[in-house]
Image 1: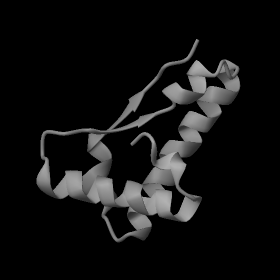
Image 2 (image 1 turned 30 degrees about the horizontal axis):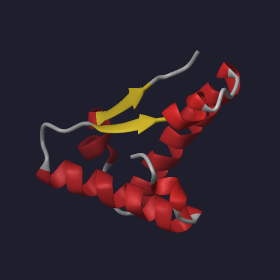
Image 3 (image 1 turned 135 degrees about the vertical axis):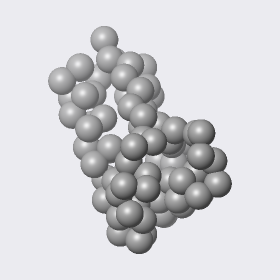
Image 4 (image 1 turned 180 degrees about the vertical axis):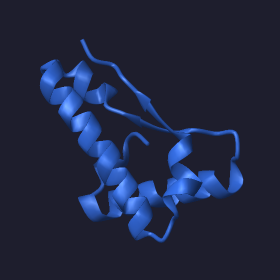
Length: 85
């Protein structure tokens, strides 16, 4: 779920929850990933980068739940991509 940051926060979170819902319903072998590679590339210190990474994951989960998705239907297929140095 990269590049959604080009939109304001509310539309970005809507896109994220739509992606999670679509993948959960239509792509049973696809894992939706949470990634902060763009932050790592900008040389943000590891402690801040990892904090943002986990905060993003939490907000993605909240957005999906607020969109009416059941956590047991999508959470097992969330994957986290670490790129910290």
